[in-house]
Length: 245
Image 1 (cartoon, helix red, strand yellow):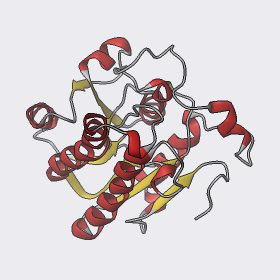
Image 2 (cartoon, one colour):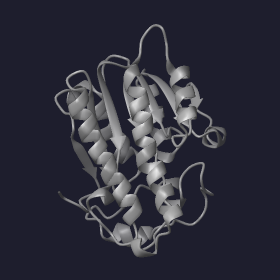
Image 3 (cartoon, rainbow, N blue to C red):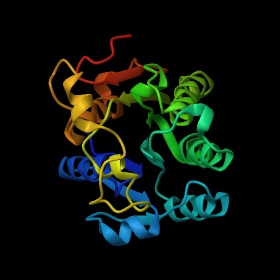
Image 4 (cartoon, rainbow, N blue to C red):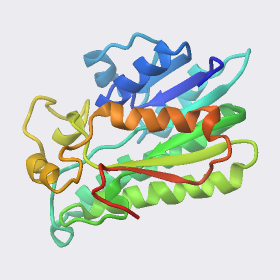
């Protein structure tokens, strides 16, 4: 990206979020980090931080109020909110687990994106984070896949409804080597065992490994910047060749 911009990152304390915040701040952008209070405590940010719980409308309203500035709005918004509850066949998934997954991965993205849109400046860019599982369906991930497919639908709908004032795109990574694989930053023991078979997944990827955070933050930076100024409603699939739509 060229000119400095004001960019909010939701889910900033997660593995991808921390790398993204560092990259954006290092490029001279005015970055605001948002995440659960426990996550921000565990991973203190080097930029201004605002607590948020994407499942709480009241907490979202408080974050929006804290973000408002008289001198201008947001030029960019990255919504990384999401977590997994592990691998369970869909027919064996309990209602509480299903609702929890949809609440955090879809409803929370809807609530926060909707609330933050009025803060976006003309020409701003929004990047939502889906998952390869949204279309590359695998056993045991039904609730999460359904929620992340919904995120793609949100991105495309917001893109149509906010153009040409804003651009809204999505990235859809495969598995990324972060605490997300143990349940998510702020929601799990980040040093615990992975909830998914990482080695088995890596063996099935043509590039021979799962993604690192930098593999995802680069495409996000591209979608935030002027190089993608004629892209909206699009999905970038980041998976080392494991899925080719």
